[in-house]
Amino acid sequence: HVQLVESGGGSVQAGGSLTLSCLISGHTYMGWFRQAPGKEREGVAAMYNRLVLKSYYSDSVKDRFTISLDNDKNTLYLQMDSLKPEDTAMYYCAAGLGGLLPQLYNFWGQGTQVTVS
Image (tube, rainbow, N blue to C red; front, side):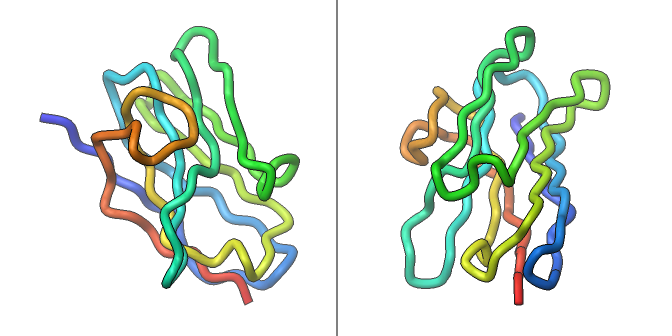
């Protein structure tokens, strides 16, 4: 049974930081996605291979967000710095085939809300 559980969302002022966590195990490709009201779900950051730890970022969050993995805790993180109002969205962690396309992921968490004002 695959289970992904996100936590760490909340409200923050522009320029602030948040760290999202996702309890996840047994997957090679993992990612963070977000969906704002009225918009399609988009890839934010993805991580390939627990050993190689190669990561990918969308242009909108590059140099502001950092994806990381703690193997001992089976936890995937998304460190979000210099947050902007346009980062407001529901954030999801997911496991699947890799990359930043949501359609390539078949296991999803319930989501955690991030609001930037």
